Length: 336
Image (cartoon, rainbow, N blue to C red; front, top):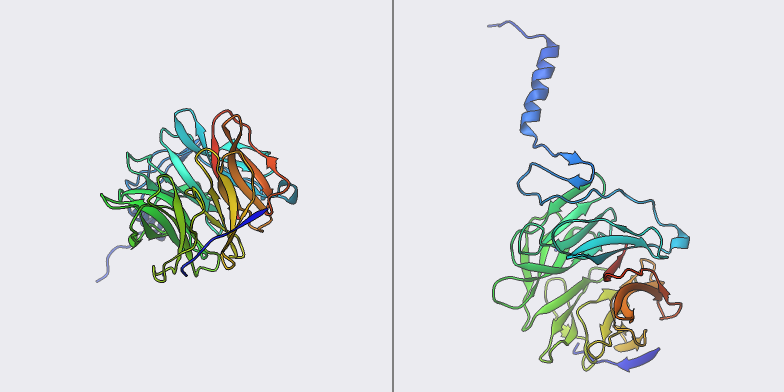
């Protein structure tokens, strides 16, 4: 691994009905008060107006076993649309889990497990956040036309979702929303577009990548969850891209950087302010740590410019290819 120095500036009585009839009438009254949700095989549908259009039912998979290393959810381009897919980290049991006439991006698991949040324009031209709960195949729309949302990240307790959002003519800023969809609010607006954000495992720090005056390049910043103590972490590392991920112990950040078309995965030691290069060639991006911190998943175009998923050890060794689809697979995220 090659290390590079980076620099930092360091939420009467009458006739009575028999009791059996009373129970029947009570049950009928309750039915009138409860909105109906219709679940059908192969799709999700509901009569409630605040729910999105049809989404395929997800059948929960068995828990990952040690030989599988773990399981990944990722964006998979299939035909004219970007869908969501899953695969074991050894490449087995691939399956596509959405099939809608819309684009779906940035899937990420809740740290509590059992649900994912992602960005989709399935209810029109705007990208909103959707929460899909595996149990009962429930789909909840968390935001509604507040802008165009990207890069969601859960707080460590799973109760708040951090995301980047472009609302109006201003730059893409950091927002938060409760996991219930309540209280969407602006957290921080910087001088330029924010393209990615991630909450540290202990909840004390938010890392985000923000555009610079160099086209296609970003720098990584850190701040407190209340948008105070903002400080720049990286300086001068060429071509930092728009994704980042904390290690489970909070010591490192994964980024990708390099000239256009030739990005590599770097591991930033936040305290030491150094960057170690983990890959060498292949145009790599969207690196993500496994829950135990032993593995890193990422997408790469090293095979004839075809975007596939790969995993490697946390030190960059033991590289393995896990998907091989002629259409792009990208943005992998590990199941907790």
